Length: 256
Image (cartoon, rainbow, N blue to C red; front, side, top):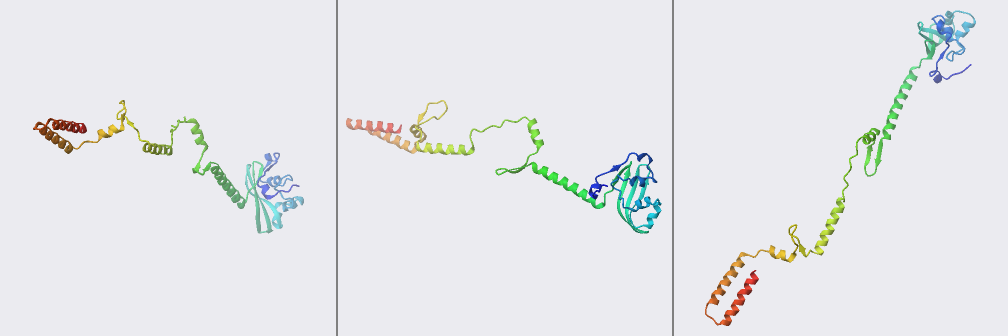
């Protein structure tokens, strides 16, 4: 005889194809009591009644484990119950077995059903978390982000746009500008090109052209020249006239 654990019985089935054509309400208990059936307990009262060649009505007068036909839907479905009889009117159900097309299965109890459903749900949730964690990425400079496989496929399909590489960074440009300004202050240029295409001009000349001469100074110089000319035209010795001419010429040269 083979002994099976209750958890193993929930995952197995048994069938004898030679009984399938003759299965009915009267022969289904005999079919269930086959010695090769792992669901049948040979220490039950049915075995005692069978050995003594008594009818199944005598089971009500006995105490112990027995099997009864609970429901029949010939020829496809039969339900057999295993129960503990304590008196002719008091029984405790232990397990139910259903026979579909000659194949015997043990019906799971409520605790096993709930346990199976909970384990299935927990397994699905755990698998979802594991898969989600496989797409999680981390880098100290970027932090956390998601990297999915479909994004990789989309990136492969899409043509990659060429990134414009900058010749220098902002830090490099600012640093170079500061160095150039420092060099310009230490070594000022001697020539300046005012307009593109023109010849460079000395810086000193541009400064002189940029400084306007006040009009008051020019008017005073004109008045002085007029006064000098009047004095020259006036009577005087020729030596003084020559000196006055030199003074006028020097004033004109300075004004230019």
